[in-house]
Length: 232
Image (tube, rainbow, N blue to C red):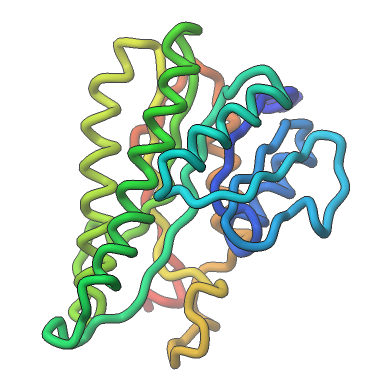
């Protein structure tokens, strides 16, 4: 039996891509999934007794607080926070980037992680257990001249998560970073990139579920992976 059966996962960005693939796998394993997304909702296309959806923006404090309240009302607790929501864009010439673009990327990719982590800790600390998992990216470990803003936001998220891990372990709470390489998803839009060589969203979902399904005595601090086709 999966360790995830009857566990409640607060999942940001489950409406498409990696988040959607992960949510479907978690539901198959008997988990309760609370989808927090600012765009279309997974519950709009899927009816499942263990799924709830809430429309909100991870970068808005009140939205995050209301989302956690709704999750607690629906399922009674939060066992796992899965920070998956993120945005990105290219910025090959930093001199042309406006402040709004910078702030939006930092707000979603860093501020959003902070806000969700803070609310999750309020639930997990009294229990003395829980798991906070953040899908960051290999862009949080290696720079890209075409996307310095994206890399900066991911480096920041990794620093936040790593620092939290050192605090949380004393509370009985596990913290894990998941760093996939380029993944074939809607993230790329119409950009001309070799998506056929990238990881597939189901590949990433399998890794995420593997991490989440570990018994509470097992801590995976960080997991990095790439597509062999992309690296070749």
